[in-house]
Length: 221
Ligand SMILES: NC(=O)c1ccc[n+]([C@@H]2O[C@H](COP(=O)([O-])OP(=O)(O)OC[C@H]3O[C@@H](n4cnc5c(N)ncnc54)[C@H](O)[C@@H]3O)[C@@H](O)[C@H]2O)c1
Ligand SMILES: Nc1nc(=O)c(N)c(NC[C@H](O)[C@H](O)[C@H](O)COP(=O)(O)O)[nH]1
Image (cartoon, rainbow, N blue to C red):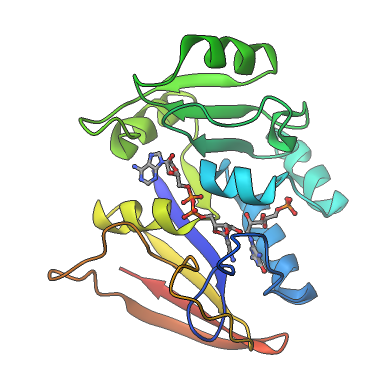
């Protein structure tokens, strides 16, 4: 699986405020760049924290890009994937509409009734739990590959991104740094989780570009 992480952070590295509501960090050009990365992906992955906070749709905005995918014998939109150990995705979440296939990655701790309700709402359930009752991301990526998904774009949030860095699963990171300060010790950052104390993942900076009123940083492991 090729894993491309994309995120937008404030000058101080926050994904959002302490209220964990969506903060518009990107400008129009950056959202267009996000749309292009989605169009190149077989699937877009987020953590359930992002679904609960933002209720994202995760489809391609630009009609020409959807047409081009159909011409290339691909689905109109990439699949949508949620790391959702306990199946907390609301059955009326926007990602469960019929504009794309939606996979929920769950662990053995997910409640059967919730899973039934989510299946009824159109979700495809993939069970891949780890010893801590979370999603085993390596196993889940294997299950997604069996569904024909080879290239995934990850759009956050900070808990999921920490796990991906921790398991050395990130192949590419594009990070838009907007020119605002959010602050707050409880506000989510690019990589939350437990944090590293040694053996820090080191990245190679491959490009720096000015976008909107911020800067786009590109990295590879
Ligand atoms: N600015 C941006 O680019 C951007 C992008 C996405 C989200 N956000 C913001 O981030 C916040 C949400 O992020 P978050 O960190 O709270 O949640 P998250 O989206 O990272 O989801 C975390 C949840 O994923 C599930 N999960 C399952 N398996 C996991 C694993 N192996 N490792 C980690 N998590 C696993 C758990 O239920 C966990 O609680 C919101 O405030 C949202 O607005 C910002
Ligand atoms: N690139 C980017 N810039 C931002 O300023 C911001 N807040 C996000 N946040 C990512 C998050 O997942 C969003 O909720 C989806 O980018 C929304 O996606 P939709 O338009 O609903 O498809 N992403």
